[in-house]
Image 1 (cartoon, rainbow, N blue to C red):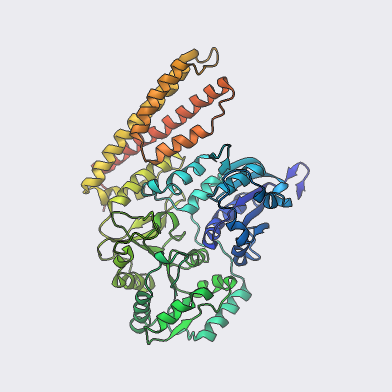
Image 2: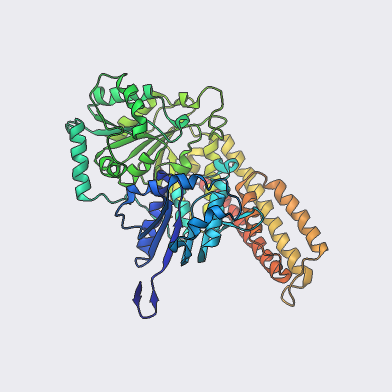
Length: 550
């Protein structure tokens, strides 16, 4: 579409071939894209069964979808394959785009990202010989901090904010991004009324199931919660779920005598946004339902344990609360460990207390329970959203995530929220583990910064930088190998180490002179990133010396 003489509509392709909840988590990116570039044309490549929810959504101009059955056949693909030809032959994927943003983690999506013509790309893309690179600093961070399970505890940034960063868009507070039309709202009211809704109290939705049942809170606990909400607090309770979860609803109803609105298996996916918007609170496992509720502006109480981790996939938006079980092995890497289920620590009384606080106030710190911590979402002054602890205790894993996230926000170009950092530094000031981690990480990143600076200097000195291009002679490479050995020993099993590896994957070694120049730029960039920690440590030291005024 032409906008005028010489003005062309910018075209953006989003590759999001994951579950419905992941698609919903991509919508803030699309909303920000439309706000920043109102005339752009957005194309979403996704699974067909995920788009019923987005029918008529103004954020997506074109859908390119494939059936879930076909999508499942793509997972084993790790190199160019005829199986992808059907998809790559679709007219929309034969076009050229100004930007291609790959939010999908699989190898097959990296092959798609490489094959589609795009002026600028971010996310995974296929290199060659079963190798996959990642384009863009935010894309690299995604696969270092979220997709890499070993590094998950170092990250507190939400997946939504990482996606927005991958698109090169400004971050900002956002509390509603899925529109509910008037006719949809009317239909939702009729569905609820037919189920027994009397409008006599707060309306609370319970989502009993989850995509992976090892992440689902026991139905008996939900039944006890429902009885409390209805009998003690006077709330009306509605059960939501797919037809496949009808058995969970029957089990629930068999354990309570209170009046319940049971809509499990009785609604379409397209009905969910309007029904959830009618609710005062949604209590849910880590599922698509919780993300849809957040998208329409309804507050969510999330129940997280096993492989679910609040920092990454907690509902986006302000004022949501997540109860997270955190044990020595949290967040879990396996679906079932054979030990005492960590879900057992998600105490019914804790959920009752959190729900009552969210429904009726006042806002307060929640009581302490073994291995259970509560977090509330808030937007920082730089526009990103983080979950902050609202229990008196803060687990060591959160300390690690806080330190590293504040560092990486600076390294990725975001301004610091000094007020939030001051609050957290004051809260953690008396924790010996926080002080020890801060000192250890400061020392580590200081050494890394010097090593990256030395690497750049070795390359420049090798051939007299400024007079002729440096060459990668064996002497230079030997020196770099020694520097890298020190870097790897310092940064082992960290986001920084994985980020380094992805940076090196970008290298084109065919042209030695150009490779040398690029390598200098990369070492200088990594040096600047590591040096970001020095500024962070200095600022926090001043905060500790001058605590926030009460």
